[in-house]
Length: 338
Ligand code: KG4
Ligand code: ZN
Image (cartoon, rainbow, N blue to C red; front, side):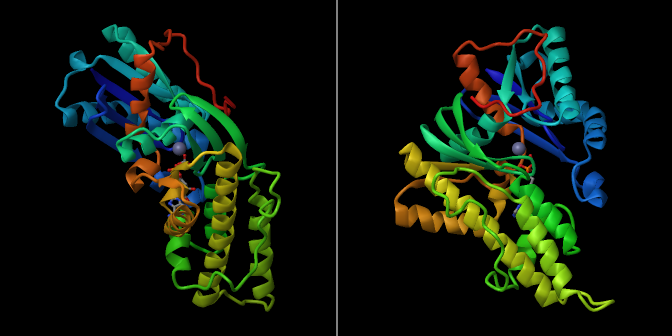
């Protein structure tokens, strides 16, 4: 079977063609990074308009690269939850139109489950049951993943997502959007122990939660403290130390709670997905923890961590179980807990 998968949950317009044997025939991602750069974050209305402009060319490109015609497709899959409502609608409407016109079955994809399925694809073998940590610009959540389609939310952020904190702190430090890669680069020249930023809930073994808004504020106060003299500017070293200290605090919280989740869920596989999983300091820390605590760590390569349509191959699991959707399928922007 050839399955066209669409992904428009946030600010990447993506399409891929995958087979029921999990082969990837093509993958196209049109990033909107440049459009949102000057705002220091994703602007929902700009994102949905850009999806409208790009979705058809992206689908055409995915089919062309896979060397397939529309009539060689067997199903269309689309991420319809969670995400930005306007963005989700563009992908869903495109998928429905194709299904209606060609008489194809429609498959719904849960974007969070798809992020963890990217780990299954990268591992090339079963990774379930596992703890799933999804860290992106919009999410910071821990799941107990019993199977590809059976998730239970264990905990998450009570305010900002980790990626959002990276983006906002980068903007405070005068670094470009997206902030994650910029902070990571800048932090390489800094000392992560220079400033002691808060690590909310880290010492509380009863809570599988994160909070990053206080950390953001702590960085803001620290910057103000360093810039007390009128006209003062952060030196490159101060900027690097701030970036490194902030990154250490985030990594401590993410790694600490992921370990706690493994312990509480009594599981020995940790799968990590989302844009922040690209962070090399986080990877390094989790690799050390995996070696010392003897759990298996799966983090996909970068192109499968950030939003993409290949992870929509989770549609194969739904097709195998006969889970098809009617053409009045809706979008669900919020997080579904189970
Ligand atoms: O998963 P993603 O591509 O999009 C969604 O938010 O759904 O994640 C984007 C987020 C941004 O906040 C970006 O700053 C962050 O991932 N990010 C990183 C790194 N690369 C991307 N954060 C930390 N370190 C990185 N290397
Ligand atoms: Zn995502």
